[in-house]
Amino acid sequence: MRTDEAHVQPQRSGPLGFGDGSQVTVRPANTSDEPALLTFLCGLCLEARRLRFFTGAADIAAAAHQDAVTAADRCGLIAYDQNGVVVGHAMCVQLDAECAEIAVEVADHLHGRGLGTILVARLARVAERGGIKHFVAEVLTENRAMLDVFRDGFDAHVVRAEGPQETIGFPTANWRRAPRATTGRYAVAMDPEGARQLLVRERERVELARAALGANGSGTGAEQDEPGERGSENLYQSEFDAGLAEDLAAQLAAVERAEARLAAGTYGLSVESGEPIGDERLAALPTAELTVAEQERRERS
Image (cartoon, rainbow, N blue to C red; front, side, top):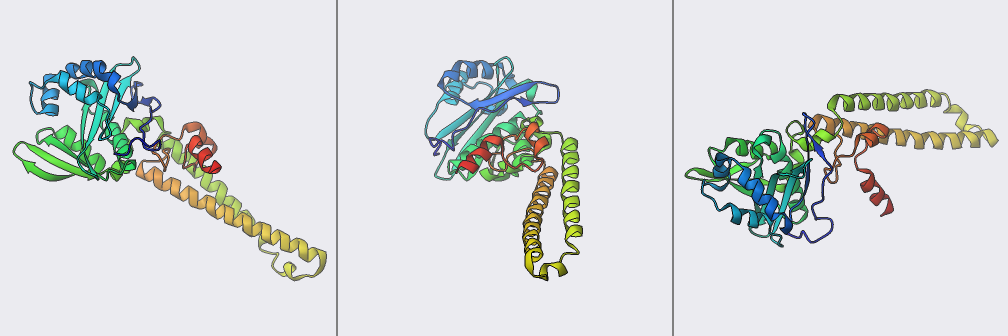
């Protein structure tokens, strides 16, 4: 994976909130994380270890060491809570030019909270930027929770089934499908009802402006043909109104795109990076599609 390039490097997230008020932060894993990863893996219950490593007698120390390794052919993320305790880890290892194998572990008390989906989505986004087009994962057939994460969140399908385990695969581009309802990473975005109200008001504002423009311009057609100074003024007004009409049409199109993102569960997330845009920016510009930093970079380029 070409993760050495600046635009590919995984970045530390802001705190990601869950419904009970707890938060986690996701950042790239590195070699200094090995002790914390060892503590995390040792803290998993025996059943969770068996489902992850296919045996209850896995070499946890070796696994922690591998999870902390940084190399050109792999990428890892860790999630930690408000106390700095590791509560999740995901890693992908490149198999060939376009495919990598992914594995995920989540602390027992956070099962079913969406953290696995968060980690898979973020890792898939990084891998896609690094040239990886497909993820595969080896999962025990009985590990329904992990299979549901891949199938429900990323539309994964069975590539191969052998004995008690399945190899499933999905395009890394499917990180964009990760559902809002099951991912804590979206809990920091504006709540759906608040977003809906913002977009309703924004649509009303744009449509009222378009209606007013049409009413004001309805009686000017004959006057535009009059010669002299008044004709020049009318021509200027006509050109001004035409530009305003184009701008309002673009604003309405932006509202429609935002409404589509709300329906898809991705409203409040950057269309470029998937990062949360932030409630303050959305309150000021409900149709915002980029974070402030991304917008500034685009305007400078």
